[in-house]
Length: 177
Image (cartoon, rainbow, N blue to C red; front, side, top):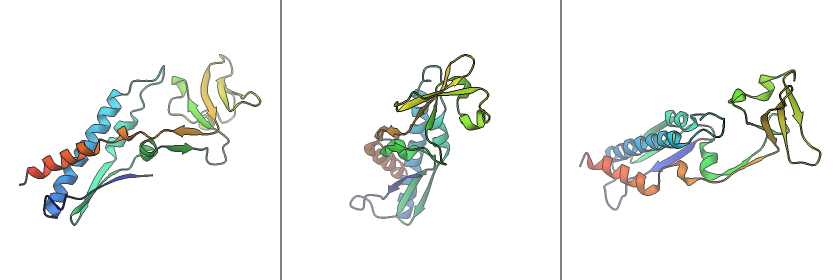
């Protein structure tokens, strides 16, 4: 899902104008990119897991366009809208569980691709429990946590505040006035 920010210059303050919309678009696009990069840099690694650079990748997908006196800034990174609005993640493709990496050796890997013949990982899912694990067969270390679903809470701080976006748009538009 793509996250889109729609921008219209304030009609009661400024005349509706494609050039103004383009300036607002430019200011907000830059603000959103910088916000995502700062968010990425401020997120430390979790435990032994490295920072995935998720928000830096999201910043790379930011694009924008103008149509008449309206502008649109788009973040085309999978999951950004989910983090912003919140929601529930369920397994897909016939899988029964989500696999959450818990060991640096499996960062950004899918268990079925990493160990298709189950030579390395052992499934441990106690009867009646809502979660299980995939552990290394020899060491017993937990490589993946398995859950039937994950609830992602809404996080409006994924984007700059509306007032920050208004300020960025106004500042950009002032440069041509």
